Image 1 (cartoon, rainbow, N blue to C red):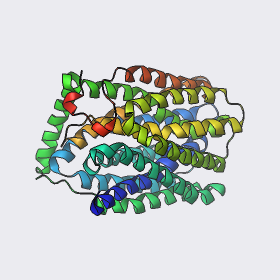
Image 2 (cartoon, rainbow, N blue to C red):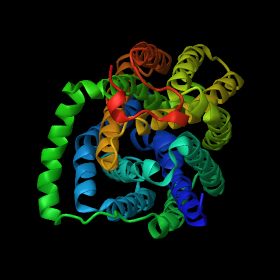
Image 3 (cartoon, rainbow, N blue to C red):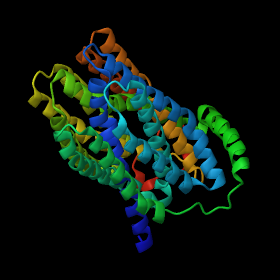
Image 4 (tube, rainbow, N blue to C red):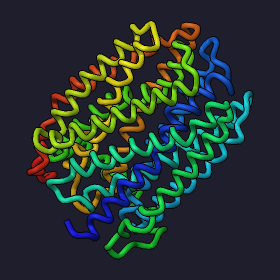
Length: 421
């Protein structure tokens, strides 16, 4: 690996460090608990419903737009400008969360949707760089490195937010997250390469991007050589819904059902990030040598156990054990899934196909949060019953994963045209 390549990969992983401030503070811990329990009120599950609705609407918008924007980026050569633009929009929305006060339900809802949509849109372009900057036999390890550095970023975000959470000055949590997000994105803005091919004019790229998106959808759904990709995306659609739902509601569940304070929630999620980092690192080599399919299957069994144990917990210390188990599975399943997708991509169409990966992953975050919120609201705030329904997503996803005729060792990545069967 050349010095230039190493610098590029470091800049790429630092972006994961940067955007983890958003996912840690806004998506996973402080804002969900603050919004559901304080801004809305959650005695009878109303806060669960509104937060579930915000996540579902956000992911629905991401799912609808990601392939389209990915196609435009491929054709117009604007992968990097789109990464920068959507990132800055998400940073701004994160900072504005500091203005949300109790009772400002719609304002908090709007900022959450804008922040999540732009965060996820930027992540499409970030992901699409992976097969372009990593050697084929190192894709799994570079992907895992990104997640590992990202979990370190989450710990940094929690440490920055801690003093504000301890004094219940939650506005400071959001401003510190915005600062970390913006600051550590700069290396990626500077060092990630621009598209090398001659770009089309933006108007023509938009038109072609729309046509290409529809054509690619038909290609994925119908062509025999895309069988492996099609089956993987179906399994990913299902199990990622479970992962996203657990992440979105873990803090709300801990606060309401088990009585965790905001500072206890932050400590809890710091533990999750550290164990996720360890899990990502521990399974990185196996992702390359045993294959991402093996790793994902093992993690789905682990995640099913997490939901059952969460249903059974009675004391706070029980939930700490569940959190460690969830954390070790979180990093591994995310890194292995991204590697799995990278092995199935046709060269030169990375952003477009990672757009569909985002579509499926975020469509796989529409149903779960909505189901959790509705079950909780219908059962007058019974979050235990809601969490056990999430386990079904992991079981069904594991069943569908077994039908994917790909996902072997990445040290000899198969051509996309050999992925079918």
